[in-house]
Image (cartoon, rainbow, N blue to C red; front, side, top):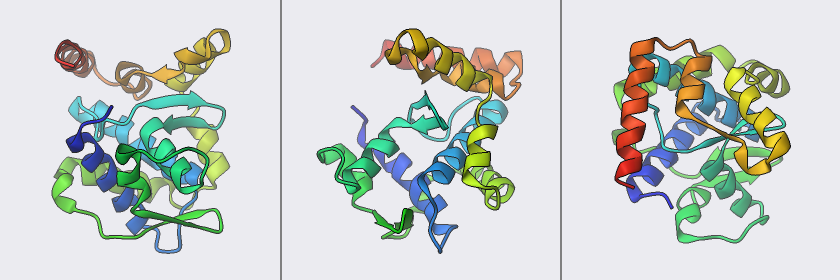
Length: 186
């Protein structure tokens, strides 16, 4: 269960990215830009941009909460109050997503925007399936291999993602400590 703050942040990230694609963006490209921005932010600042968990699926890392929200729009799963917070602000047409409202930029830090902008600049013109291939990094490979024995073990940890981005030992230790504190109080 996500907190209101986590949902607000995920919604802001999704809306910010969608706003940069006025002609729409497909699911794979959205997810990969979210992943690459998250990885870059972890490596540089020792924390993620958003609290959406990435899972290793066939076409690369998928942000679970965002994906479920989009599945609500597609009519594939039943709406919940939490999922509807994001589903309600996205429209789907011709296999592309569009923002229904403007992003609340107060939810995004300067470093969040910088990493998202860098990911968009680097990958906006890359074919979605090529992005999928690029996202098959060590974090994805490890989680995907674990899931072959047990489908419930496909979660990509923040430390795995940071390691895949060649984060320093200091950053990895910072992430580990933050995750231990978060888990102790959740």
